Amino acid sequence: MSNSVIAITDSEFAAAVLQSDQPVLVYFWASWCGPCRLMSPILDGLTISYGDRLKIVKMEVDPNPETVATYQVQGVPALRLLVGGELVESCEGALSKPQIEAMLETHLPAVA
Image (cartoon, rainbow, N blue to C red; front, side, top):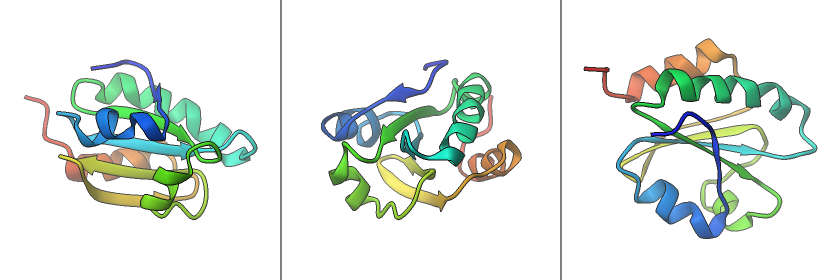
């Protein structure tokens, strides 16, 4: 359980995402992407709200072509939600915090 977005690379993807015991939201971004700069603070805030039931990781697209290709990231920002190592939700483009929360609530277990 983390209260921050964790930066990962292709080589860390399997351990950080596929083998996670929690659902994982993967945030694909690029340093040259204006909308990504808008999304980053939203995702940082979500780690506080969802940190007990969701891991959020970010992956810069340019230095990590393997995972970008595997998850068919066509543009950034992009989000991929994986539960039990399986892709359950995918979206691209800038989203508002309520839009991301609605996506997460569809797939995450309720807080007990």
